[in-house]
Length: 637
Image 1 (cartoon, rainbow, N blue to C red):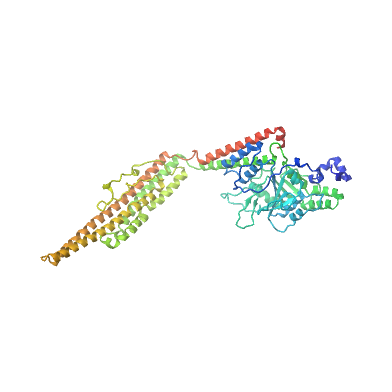
Image 2 (image 1 turned 30 degrees about the horizontal axis):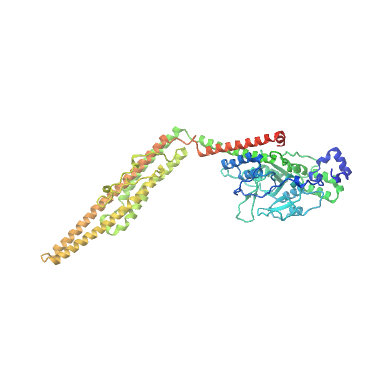
């Protein structure tokens, strides 16, 4: 018993009646002799680690190795279902001999009340007001978070841009290896739309977000083991109740709500395990100040302290943070909560998938609907190919490439031909194929299957089948086609037509112009030579030779160019029909043999199965760790 207790007669009576046990721990343990350095617990460093940080594997205590490995595997197998910040907190706790327990004190929309409450929970009533207390409650309007860590030297902790580190020489922090983060939480937010994925209330409370001073910086998560939410009045309690209506029922031991209310007329006692506790910071502050004025005010202090409701929060603060031979109860609660969250997220994903599959019609209805849409699309596409090309090849633009206009339109061959393919060749059919592909994808059919048709088999390019001026062959059968999804057949065929048929047509036009001019020039030169070398040749006879050469060259150009134009028209029509036929056959093949992706081993199914297996390994490792510590270890948990 501390010496000062025996010097107070009233407290001696309280000790005999058992009421001394209700006096706060910090008050009763002020003058306890310090342990020797060999018995002091080694404190682990507590620096915030970003979820994306890459660290070397620490030296894991042997008793924690199995559970640490299971949690590490969970981070890879269930990365989309687990909160990485909380998982890293658990891994860091298992990697240390005696890990720091993080507790958050969050004020509802205001940080000042949370700072005042944290000061009362850690202040030493037997000592004078210290500098850290003044800094904590000065209320300068700065909403920057404050991290309370054990220590005496303000310069011994590394500063952080996310929070202000305040060293506190509190025996509560030292003996229980605690850190307290004082910040705020905003619960007055509009309810988001159902389709928008937002952070759950549980994550908002157990993973507070800290904002860096820079405006463009994103909030950084700071996970904690326990959270004390501080509200002022019934309105704040109702607001927090609405905020936490979905998601905080299963974390009663990890989250506690303290509501500042008027002091009741009779002394009340709130259970430590209760989710809420009425408090009055003003009464607690007055009781603390009165005891610091004089030790004779111990009775006044005791009455005011219990009326303020703070003993309940003091007991909750140090609850389940004692060191165990196996694992701390707070650490076990954290890991259990993580596995529960993963399983809950997997169940939500399963339910969503089942609802999606339930909304899909039966196989026969789907097949009949798709076949009907396919037949409609094929009929409209063939009609479009016929009508649009007929209109294109009778238009003024195409007639600009007549053989007798080729002399001054030779450079427009590529432009006019490309315009026909891009604006007239199966444009609506391509759009319809995209809509049809969307319907098939919604019904569960794959986009592509291994299916080879006769139209896709390339022909061998021979010397006599290569395009020439006399044999202007411009079909695409000489090119090897790579397998592509059926929905891209039309676009791919159009690209091949542009690349493989228009350049030879342009080259042929230029070659014919050159040959025509060459033949005409030679015949003209021959007529002039005959006129001057042969005296019997008149001007008329010499001109006849030039006219004959011009006529032959123009006739040859007309024949070859008109033949090439007709061949190109036939190639474009035939390739359109072949593309539509190939697309239709591919779709029918998929409908017959593709099946639906309903109960297949999809990637998401495999991922959920691996996540469940990882959760089971974590639970088994947690159970074996508890069993290894014997009955005492289980009871402590």
